[in-house]
Image (cartoon, rainbow, N blue to C red; front, side, top):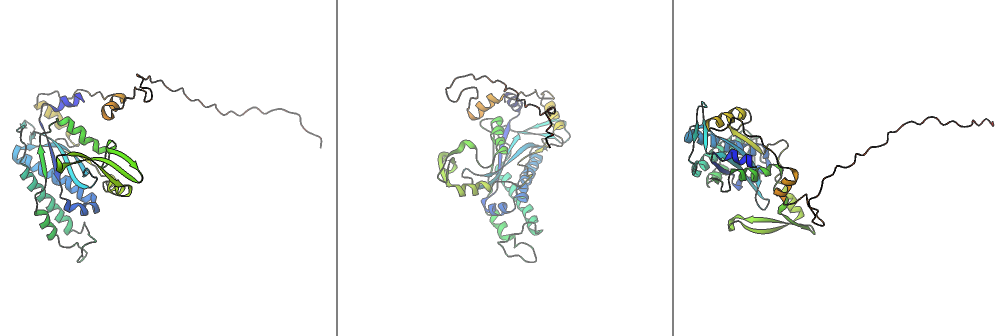
Length: 321
């Protein structure tokens, strides 16, 4: 953790969130793979375009997909952690951005909405998104114009601010969602009599903590809304962090920023330390009597006796016949 923070501190970072309107939820839940891919592409194209126009270079950021809200409902958005700067196209210099302000969110929202709707219209007209609820003509979906008008009637929510607790905190918090779906275990409060009770935060009431109870069937239904198609990548990297060339571009960025070409080696925490930091459980303490530290002793090796064929047993031969 300390090594990661040391790497991130020299360059300010911004936390960006691109959110799709809930009007699209029924369509997305029916066609997850193409439309969630479109969400990634529209957010990437928006940042690349703004990076070229505002900074004049190549941006770099990881994106993590979330499809849920605090009540397990559908709420599709991507989190981005972007450095406040860009790598010049020829790689000769690092272009710094204002550490207090990256891009205007209204411009991001307008460009993001335009790119998503334009790509959605192409999918619609090529019959890639058949909608059984709507009448079709000639094998193609119904007219896209009403949905387009509805999508353009409201501003799309885009968030872009420096992370208050630091980029390492955002990276750890958002990154944990790549290994879970919809809800973390610590939010589950009670499972009893066919009902599930879990903690949530009401964002419209100042993130006030509250508890919500759902029938088991409804809880499972909401949970399954967020299961992604097989092989779909929830975490993606773009710009100078793209996997195909990040080894070269990151090395160049470090050189331009006056940092070592290769980062210091990381020493992952031991299992006991990691469990205590993440869950608060001390594996070195006895859960019954509280004695500590517990000693880890290897289990004796279990050796199974080999099966040998015994020598034939000699005995008297019965020749009474």
